[in-house]
Length: 87
Image 1 (tube, rainbow, N blue to C red):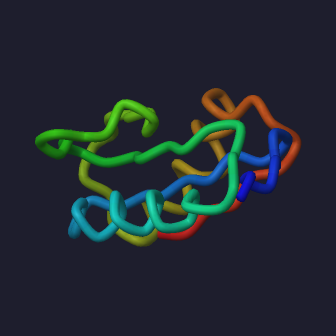
Image 2 (tube, helix red, strand yellow):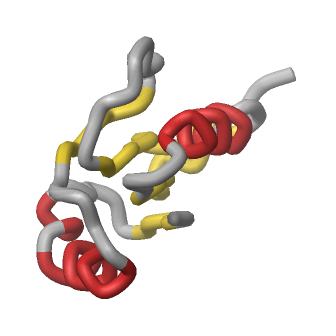
């Protein structure tokens, strides 16, 4: 079975608390879908991060800081017209 091609969508998780959960969610979300990119934004890089997930390092974020990052810095990293963000 071929995957659904969504090459105009980037899927992203912004998480400074439970990185393993974010990695699992990104991998599960891409099980039947090919996204343009999968991105994990966090203050630390998890051990054995799968190569298909791009990592962006940031400071530890509060809810307010995460919102600020999303609106001010995130556009510099996303190259697609659509972003699916779950944090």
